[in-house]
Length: 221
Image 1 (cartoon, rainbow, N blue to C red):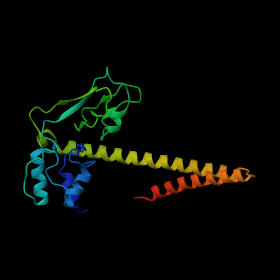
Image 2 (cartoon, helix red, strand yellow):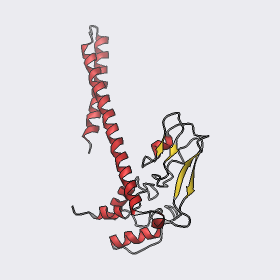
Image 3 (cartoon, rainbow, N blue to C red):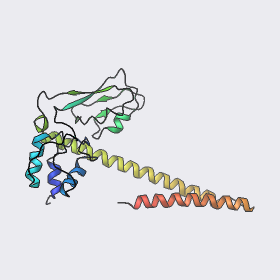
Image 4 (tube, rainbow, N blue to C red):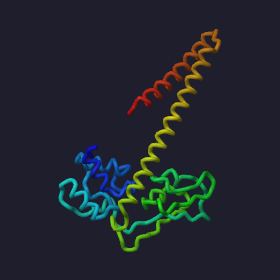
């Protein structure tokens, strides 16, 4: 299969999914570059070498990293102080590559080999128990990261995205089924007085509106 320009650009990104580029993940940033809506110098994890790679792919000139998006630094790995962790799961929800293990009200821990250093888990932590430790010495950009690590991170991110989408769809289906059952119960209610009939119609309207919203949501690509 022939790769699109966005595919080639995405392949040149480090797949840290850090959002520092201003987009929710590496793929949307790649698509924005391909569409001429973003510049090639918005990825701090890729560093200057990453900009050179993107310039070669897009035919654009090499420019410095935009400081608005951050600075090129050694790659870091998150560390959780387990003595302070309260098990809130906010870091797990924030991690784009499922590199954090834990459960509600239980201690969490980072999987260092899977952490991309995105630091998205730091800000949500309500007890400040997460810190980022540099692990690559003076090496920055692609000198601190490999194509194999990038591909593994992309696979974990894509798997997580698919799982979350599946969970949303399953939840929507449960809610829709619940609404249909509720409508059936309302229709079965015996209503004799005008007030009872009006209340029954009110309930029908509310449930019908909820079902229609669910239908429209499910129809969206």
